[in-house]
Amino acid sequence: MRPAPSTFLLFVTFLILIPVAAQPPQRDPQAMAILTQCLNAGGGAQTLAAIQDFTALGAITYSWAGQQVEGSVIVRGRGPGQFRLDAALPGGRPVVSKLHLDFSGWHATRVSHNHQSSH
Image 1 (cartoon, rainbow, N blue to C red):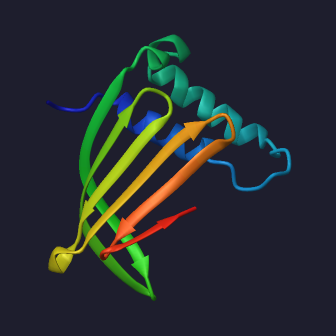
Image 2 (image 1 turned 30 degrees about the horizontal axis):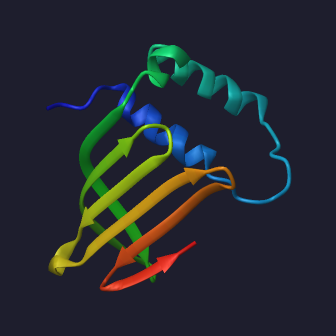
């Protein structure tokens, strides 16, 4: 199954929604205009809200210790509050990142190189 073009837009929207600080966000009018254009290009808020789940395949590049590490990635989302990224890197090193949303905000769990951490 080939992912819908709006899958990337939904992925970007999830990343933008991850809170970075406890203070109220500052909204850049130009950024908001770009996000509105992306939302409209994806079919509007109602169309994106109707998406139950998605899967996207692609390439990913991590920057670790000043080195670019490239691999393949599968991105999955289910509902508005679950997101998972599975990356396959050289040497068989898996990276799995999971995000879930609850009433207190987004929570991340990353499993990498047989090591698990929560943020």
